Image (cartoon, rainbow, N blue to C red; front, side):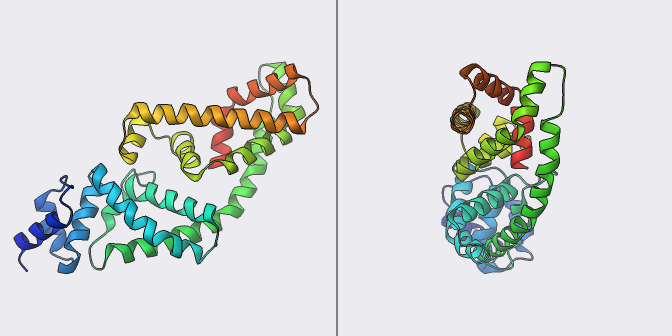
Length: 256
């Protein structure tokens, strides 16, 4: 099949997707399998930031990630975490901010390529858990370290373990999508505009998501601390004040 026919077939397979450069498609197809033309077209559109292509990719991920991730750990929360992390790498990338979906060369079906990527991500996630537990101990020490406010220092030193436990538990109970939203913003340092492009929505919507998630998280932490500690309402308010003042650091530690 000639290039023009492959281009036409790919556009027919994804009629709602348009952000694909025809010349780049031709360069990719020079080494790709002809039967993967539609997959190459979709991957290029995803790398270009086409929100409609992102939805097409999500549909494939929902089909291939669960069975791949479940081979490592059969847990719904684990599978969701793998899917969120893989989606982030595919559409945003790592420190270089280059979408990993751009590495798809079309030598085999996109679904198979994503299935292998999901398995690698699941294995990496398990391997990283031990390192995260070690890092938490050092982070707790930094959280309890002194500052310029004696009152806040006292609260940190006295309740640091309970503070950490409540925050970690509240984060663990968040839905994977909301937890990943916090990770993108507080750990990866993405702007609301970047997250909006990734999710196919406006930055103002992302801002509302963040505000709602942070408020729910603070409310949950306050409830957990109130149940675990025998403190006065004013002491509990002071402790929540520490959480608000240290939110960026605390979330960076807990979500890294």
